[in-house]
Length: 251
Image (tube, rainbow, N blue to C red; front, side):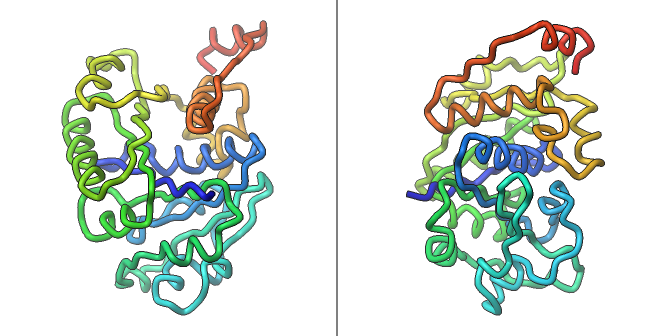
């Protein structure tokens, strides 16, 4: 059965799109059939993270009813299928539409469909939430962002979505709010803590997910840990000398 997971946040800039691209690749590496959909219609970025810059058909065309989701799908060498949103300003007036039926009809062979939802609580986000069965909440461990994420959690519960857990992203050593406090605050498990790291930016600039660009990096290892949690598997990483050297240099 296909799991349709919406990756949501209450505020922009927390790294939601980067998480979607890397989770998709990580799941494909585990032998899963994965599609990722950019449902951030007014702020499309997901395709760019895979190096997808020019494409004739997008999720905007699907929402217009002009094509099927299969025709807007592009295969990445990692095995991930990408349904990007349009980068054209001419498509900004497209009305968000629930395309869950399209997903079920055309992507039923997938184990996972990851949806990069829009930020905030406007109609674009609500429609994206309607398409999902499960939700992964991404936030940064600072009070304003946590507050926005809590509102998003409330809306997801109102839509009767199963919330998998929380991913703390772009975490710095100086952040005051800790994993245990945030878990208790949301009454949800924190399933991943991804550090702020300039290698993430380097991978984005290379248009290649960090889990492919720097597979042994500590960020890549944490993404694998999140993947294993979602697959119901225990993550075991045997740290070797190279890992210790990379850790020393914060790589």
